[in-house]
Picture 1 (cartoon, rainbow, N blue to C red):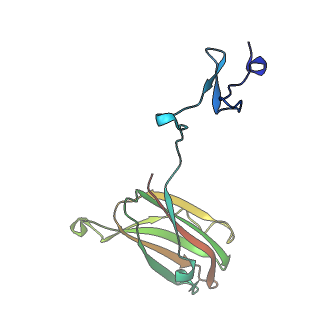
Picture 2: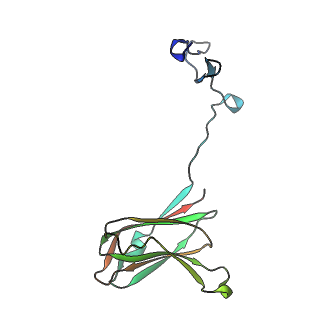
Picture 3: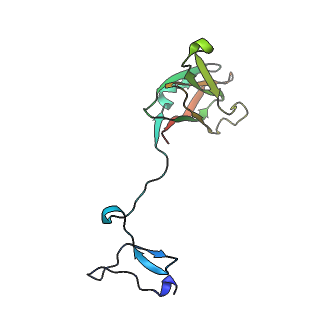
Length: 159
């Protein structure tokens, strides 16, 4: 018999109880979890948002700004989301302090999707695995005009 024709379960007072439709048995079953409580599971990412727009401020034409980030504990990856309000961003980098500088440069720099070809109003987003807790964000302005950011947000992912 379909669920639309079955009576829903009720408690001793005649009130409906939390329940689900069991397709195999074609009947309503009480919805219970551990200790009689509902089974609730939260899913999704654990993300901390760090707004660095104010710290970056105005980037002079042809210049750059580098902001060091205090990465929260247990961060597994980091991403940068930026958008210019005025001017044009020529490049943006997530920089990690090299944990073993004897093997090369003390900074490992990852350039975000080349932004020089994007309209100034296009947001740029890139997510990278965290390789060191020494993290910096470097944003460079095009030589034409100063850059003012609408936003510059760093997301620290713990998932």
